[in-house]
Structures are given as structure tokens and as C-alpha cells.
Length: 430
Image: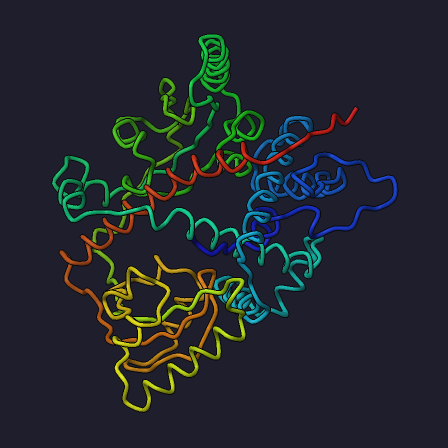
């Protein structure tokens, strides 16, 4: 859900497969994913990039066979998600992509021209990088569309968190945690469980004897952060998975506890470091917004949806009531019943194209028709405010982090189901 800032990281994390590259003569097939292919040259290209990144960051590079398996697994999951997005109509046009790349350059405090030069120095083709960013946006939209509507954080949950022993303390300390996941099926047999437990014991023993955590994570973990050496980055307590909430604060730096079991598998964690976080609650920008959505389908084309919304905008400018038109015409049934109102929202919970348009509007302005992964919209910003009070900002921050935690936990299960439902054949390199 966060836009990547590291240029080389963007080039690694969303690299897709058959859609991006043409099979060269004699190029071996590493895997097929439904009706697409992943070539051996694509896997090798990604491995070289990751090996260089690991060297630059001072991490040990795992042996090639382990890294190759990890890269291939990642490319397979990426391809499965891209295919699902295409089947369900998610697209990213060139304007949206240009805006995203400009934002990445700005976040890195460089221009797009300088970005091209940096990528060239790293041996990365800008057009390939551009396609990778497009795919990352598409995957992010797919994940938000399929997962985010299922996530609710109640005021009671926020209250319980803030009143819990780790509540306020959880916002004052940041933890850097390493994570290795050994997967289990939904209903593992005793034999599968025994095999996983033996593998976990072996991994923990190696780590406690001084084996490099990042190297082991790349070789053995199936977690989302495996290619980053299992590093979850700096997070406050409520940003960590619920499973780790009670364990992490009790750990000493570099300590590795016994494995933790969940529905996803067995989790091995290490407290890499911890530090004090800012005690001042950040200000939270909120926007009161309403919209009218027209979905495209077999009966409604993009041009027809766009024209219909342009006509509705014209009617509003001539004095017709936005709320009444939303109730009558909007395809978003949940907000249509409230006159199109989405209430007070922060841009972090919105898909990028929606938040970009929202940020560009003045209060009471109505946007031109624009497209998101949900369909075509017109939007009106009704009001804006900043929660500057520590208490309100603290509650909003806690709610946002709890929502992110739930999102990541559901993402693991969703991604595994998506992968299991795809037809995947991996070819033995030998």
C-alpha cells in the first residue's frame, strides 16, 4: 500500500513475466503460469539484481539454487496477480503511471531525468522499470479492491488497544524484526507437521549458532519479505502481525525465540534492533468527500461511463442536487444510499488515482470524470480538516495501524489462495 522509494527495489519487487518479455531462441522455460510463461533468462536477470543489492547492503548472498527458487516463486505470484487484475479490468493508463514515477523521483529528491541516469548506472532499462512500476500499481489496486473492503476497525478495538498494556507503549517504541515463514497447508497431516517442525528446529539452531539471518530467510522463507532477507523494517507494535505483539517486546536484541504457529505456518522471528519513536502524535489530514461511480461492463463502455458522468456534472453545475443524483445513478450502493458520501477519509486508505484527484480539488470543487480500478467517478470535496489534537491524532494513528495490520494478515491468506488456484508447472533446470 506504500509507494516504493528505493529505485532498485522497485525494479525487483514487481517484475513480471511473459507480458514483459519476448522468448528468445533457445531460452529455457522456467515455469508456466496458466497460459503465460516465465523464462530462465528472466529468473537469472532478477537473481543478478538481487545478488548485487545484497552485496551493496552488506548481506551475505545465499547459494544460487536457493535464491533461484525464491525468485521464481516471487515471479509466479506476481504473474498470478497480474493475470487476475487483467481478467477483472484493472488498468493503469500512461498519465497515472507518469504521475507515479514522478512521485518516486520526488521522494528520492531527484528528477525523472536523473532517475533514468541512476537506473542506467545500475544496469536497469528505464522502459522495463516503467513496466515494473505499472505492475506494482496494478497489484496494489487488486489487493486493495479484494481485501480492503473486508477490513473494519471499530472504535471499540481502538479503545481496547489504547487501554492495553502495550497500547500507548506500542506507539512509543519501534522494532526492527526479521521473519522467516515455513508454510503449512490448511489441515496439515502429522507427517507434514513433523517435517515442518524438524525444518524449523534446524533453522533456529543455525541462526542461534550465528548463521546470517538474511541469507537463511532468502533460502528458506516463503514470507512476503523473503527477498529482503526477511527484514520487516522499522515498525511500531500495532504495525506488526498480531502473532508477534506479545512476543516482540519481551525479546532482547538479536534474540530468536521458539517458533510461533499460525494458519499460514510456522514463524521464526528475530529482534534485529529497537529504538524510541517520536512521542508526538502526528497531525492527520482528513477529507470529507462524496462521489458518483459508474462501473463499466458489457453494456457500458468506458466512453459511455465517462459521458454519463460528464452529463451528471453538468446537471450539478446547473443546480441539481449531487446527493440525489448519486442515489439515483451511482453504482457504489453503499455510498449511494448516503448521497455518495464516503465520510471523512484519509488518503492512505484510498486507491492512488482516487487520492490523487481528491488532493487536487479545492473544497466544493467537482472533478472531471476519472477512472480507477472500481470504474469511472466524479468526486466532490466537501470539507477538509487536520486533527491536530494529540488525542484525536493518536486515535487515528492507532486505527490506521490496526487496519494495516489486518490488511497484511489477510494478504498472506489471499495470496496463498490465489497461488493455489492457478495452474503452475515448474520445469526442472536440469
